[in-house]
Image (cartoon, rainbow, N blue to C red; front, side, top):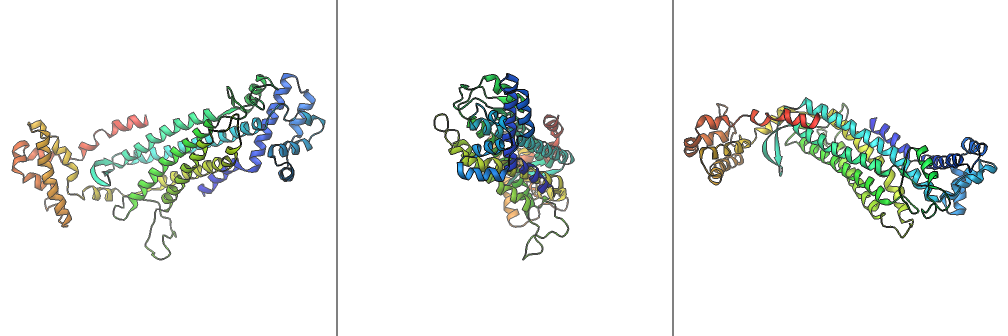
Length: 442
């Protein structure tokens, strides 16, 4: 339900109705500005504000003849007015209306994306605090490394989204500009004050200089910001998919009563939500390419950008909004299995403590190269025995790796049995988690 609701809110910003309404809002703002500057009298201004309207079917009919959507729009609005229609679109070019209106759409859409990101960050923070000290194994290259906590993983996500939030706010500022500068951007037919008054009415800044359009590097910044955000959301999704693999089974997407995973295999519980998010991220990244290619237009402009923007703008925002809501729901409802995390942490018979042992040997006067050889030769024995399905813990609870280290006379002579045993302490790896959390969440 939340996914559908989210789609409806963002989608409503990119309908044909919303597009023409934004055009009308810009035109009305310009009429008000001309009124303040003394060109349009109060009576005509109020008539345009009160009666100016458009009819989508009429616009479509007119456009079939004119082959020009903005002229079809202004003609439709003029048909709703009287003699005062002579002031509608006065001194403007098409892109003054269209690009300034697009700025309104981009601004409101980006504000919604920023709100979505904050909601995801809140969900991640809640789960991070919940699992701040939930032990699990850290992996590099997909191979067990050292103990970490699930909360630490989520703290990394939160910090990453914080950077995206900063980037999105910068993009919001970059795109929240309008232009009413005329056919070539030279203000030949209107004063700069007109642009300033109209943009102030619309809640936009003014582009310091323009030609016939708002420069497309601004739009490309938005597209790349969304693409970067989508890439991080995909990163989170891929990690959940990995944790849900049967061999790991450390986390799982919430599986609702009555849900089915496979038409053939009734036992299946598949990570379908995060797989969906992974695929959608590819689409958003793909849209960044045409947005960047639109930056280089001919002279003061051509319209090669226009066709692509009808796709990438609404699709990127609607899809990204959907992804954020979906992934936020996954995080909130994620089933976390600390016992399985602990089981996997112990899977390699204590090998996760190898660096801890390694770092004790230089303190005893051993060179790093020799220390590495001592620690690694025992670790390799464990790998071989795990490959032979040997038990990773003995009847006394000692891990396989600890057994080998205690049987290594050279190592025992160097640092002693008690020091070796003290290296197998999970608390050593969590002692700074509170400090890290203060950095991330303060």
